[in-house]
Image (cartoon, rainbow, N blue to C red):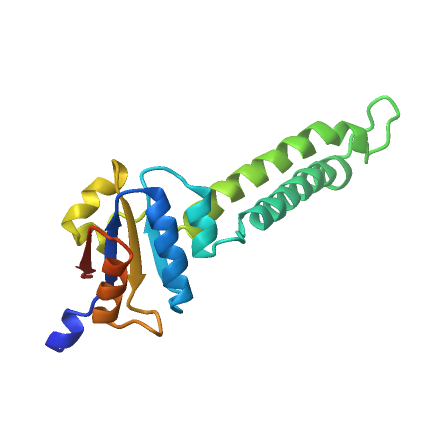
Length: 181
């Protein structure tokens, strides 16, 4: 592996004092044509999420499909047991007594939805992630306290290290740091 490949940047990260500065910086960076960027804040901020452009999540669809699969599985398990494998005529009721299947079907629907929600969130967010390149930036320790960070990733088609540094500093970033992998 060449020396250049070993030292390839993950991106350039700017540190900001406030959420308003961060939101303004995100909007300006997006106006400049950058699309591969991420923001880090000490608490969730809806405006940051919207400014970055994350609007659609796959989690609701995954939960819906998990609930449907769970409900159908619960119903057909009871159907298989009561009608096909072990049919027992109790009090003259039909073998396929679907009203009796409703509680278990409902619980299996909830179970399928919850398990798929947990799995979907973990998988779509790439969790667990014990290491991320932004952890190499010394000042990033303040991200969980009182600072706001914007990272322009090097996989962006318009990425140029010097231009990214200049742009972040021109947007009132306290400092701009290289993020090494």
